[in-house]
Image (cartoon, rainbow, N blue to C red; front, side):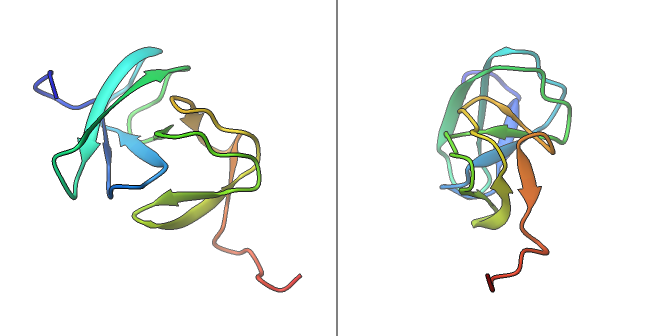
Amino acid sequence: MTSSRPDFLAHRSGDAVAVAVRDLEPGPAEGGYLDGDATERVELTKKVPLGHKVALRDVAAGEDVIEYGIRIGIASADIVRGDYVHTHNIRSARWQNSVA
């Protein structure tokens, strides 16, 4: 990373979302992964508050949202790389019943 402090951190390579380590404004942001040296640069589409999630990749409505290498939610709307990810575009997978 070019800056001394990352803007966001993802837990594992392959995660769809990362966590903002400070309040972030729309525009370029850079972060990394806790499980390696890879870095990511994204163009934030909206403000992302400290501790909230930013999309590292596009996620289609109905698709699983991956964090910690596991499914943490289901996209309730299309999510674009750089979007703020919160209750307006993701719902919890915790209480989802696998039986239709």
